[in-house]
Image (cartoon, rainbow, N blue to C red; front, top):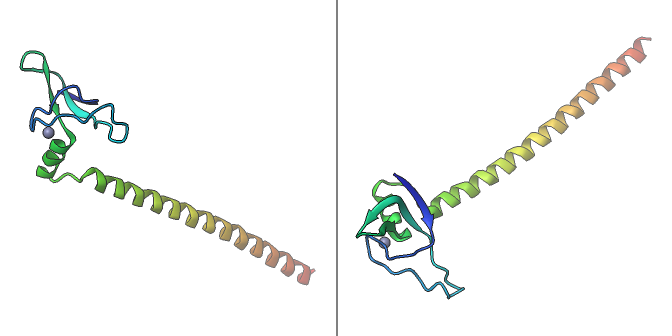
Length: 112
Ligand SMILES: [Zn+2]
């Protein structure tokens, strides 16, 4: 069975909530999960609102969308931090190579 998020065209099959007014620009309707190819009540789709999807996710202990977003932000922050540390290490490696080359040249001059 395939599912898709689509703009609401009917009430939620589980709770019967009615989608918000689509003409209200401040509160656009949230997409609902529609089971593709599933027909109920002769022509209607199996359709779940995001609240019901959240309840189902809680039942199987899935993280909420808010928690997922929080973890994604933390991952992005840690990636940036790791990139900066790697860049700093590369600069230090370059500096160490230059110091070693300078010390070798100084030693060669003293021995010449
Ligand atoms: Zn619902």
